[in-house]
Length: 630
Ligand code: ADP
Image (cartoon, rainbow, N blue to C red; front, side, top):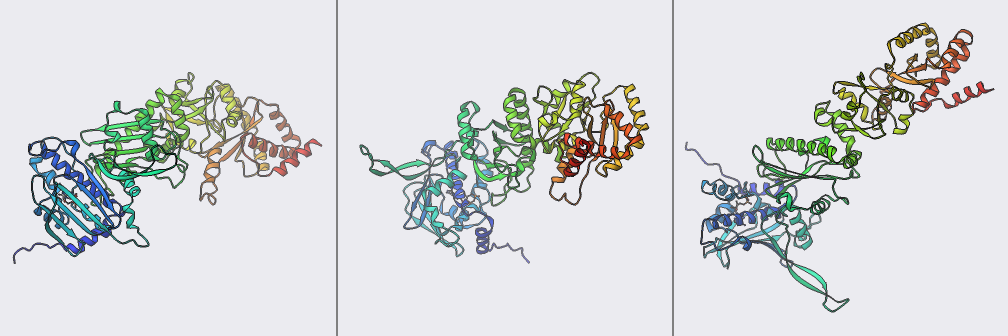
């Protein structure tokens, strides 16, 4: 049997197209305008080698007009136009793209680079989402014949000769009747068309014009108004990111950023990137000066706008930004993305991943430049978004460590300022092999911790961690420049010389029975009691053993779902061996165990308070203290 051709079920296909490819009906205008722009590009391209084309670049235009009574919207261009056959082939066949053929015709490969948008041969039909009937009148440049293609959708189309004075194409769409869900007549309103052009087609290279009405004060009058009709260009044509950097002022960037991304403040930094080679794209990105109100909530959506050849494809492409740089706003324009048929979503695209990698690198570089050259600005940035960078270290289990560890800052005991890890290490004392840190609610409270005082007293710098994520991030980093991080409130803080260490060990061994007694009097909240020689003046402090610090315990238990787990740090009550209290306790252990039990409870309560923790049993402690006073 002879091979048979598949037949396209045009009706069904059209129906499918209209109802399922696009999620937003409004994009029909983007598609028709992109077609008009392609048509002009084609004629312009022809004019480069064909003297009979008398138009110059400034003659080209796309024109919108509406007739509210007739419910029609018209899109006219003075581009290449379509012959009778072309109308038949391009508009009579779904998924036939004259533009795609044009782009791939070897004859058109040379000469000036043109950026044709069309490729799938379906965009035109998107107009049936909003239209009952579409009329296309077209005349090829240089021909004196014009034809009119007309269709009301699935029941087919007609092509007839018509009158058309100039070359180009006029598409008239007759809008559907309004329904409860959809007000099609909105597409006849100037404000709606204006905003759609701004949104999707602002960077079409030819002017999109429309007669618009404005109300002005009458000349010579103070209160009489008159309506004036103006011929207005609705698109800005040249994208800011296509202009050379020297042509754009800081104010223009700020204006663009504020208008487009709805911020009341200018950005802290503008980042531009242009890549040619394995991937071709241009990016214009901004680092905001402050976090948007919803930034740290689950409602926040990261992402950059994605343009393909100047036409907006996606409002928030989240695959372009890694989570740790989710604060960046801006856009990417690339002509070599493989778009899916609706041009709304991208398929999992290799090209997109390459672009995202390049952007990530660029953002990291810019941040580190900012840190180096404009410390004040960087600190402002860090206050707004620093948590996100630290979160990035933690959530990637360290795989972003190299990129992020030099971008994070901590408040430090050194002059009370922010420090980078690099700065900390550069200031380390001879023989210091640990990076000391402490966690607390505020810098002031941390500075008052007994252990912090004593570490600083020994001449070391301490990082002050106040952000919930801080200690988790440091645990993931584990080391910086081969120096380990050490929480000064950990029990193995080791600042003494060998002789002192030996002495402490002996004392602890000798008093082990006393410590067991004290621990038993306090109860399960403490896992161990011991002497320490790291405190300077304070009689007691708390430290922890194991992986969970006191600060981490607090944070982990705050997290949703943590109620049942009840994570507990193993807390050690440390008693200053050089304090007179140490002798007193030993005495009591010999002579008055009841009193030692009371002292133990009070000391534990004191240590909790000094560490910034609250008491579970304040009434009991209060009456114990009173008893001692009487
Ligand atoms: P695409 O733009 O993806 O190619 P469309 O369905 O939008 O697909 O258009 C089909 C074809 O019709 C285009 O490739 C082009 O050849 C032709 N066409 C559409 N609109 C115009 C126009 N305004 N002027 C000239 N040709 C047009």
